[in-house]
Length: 170
Image (cartoon, rainbow, N blue to C red; front, side, top):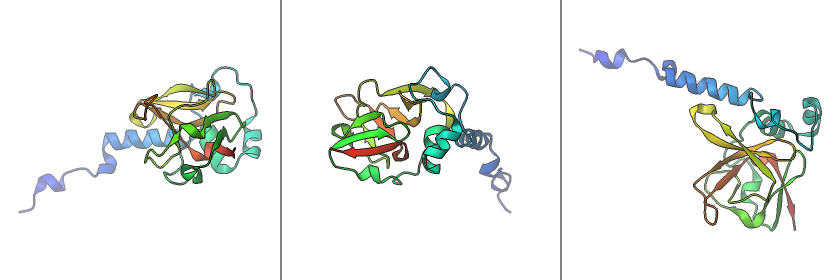
């Protein structure tokens, strides 16, 4: 006789948790969220979404303006080892010095500290979790997230999307 407990189980794609996760993922990919950094306070660099689309590559636009996330390991900046500065791909604001970059093993460029006043943070509750989103203080573009599992001296890991950055060697 077959085990009816197994045959009566609902497939995972019908569980409420999966539906909530899917809805959050859809929201994260579908454009700016209400209350996002880009809708908050005044930024020095302001452009229409049409102007941002004309300036940025499709991947940069998706990450910086729509809060997207690139695949882990997708950015060549993850392997960048030269001395220099990492800038916002949208407005060229200097965000991180190469001296603060380290290999976190996450698949994204990671830093333990930004340049003073270069970034801002907001709470991000997408994907069913609470995270701290990092955005450019000059244009409001989404850069990534910061986590409390980085190296000293800060103990922070600024996990950035390479698509949101450009690199200027010294």
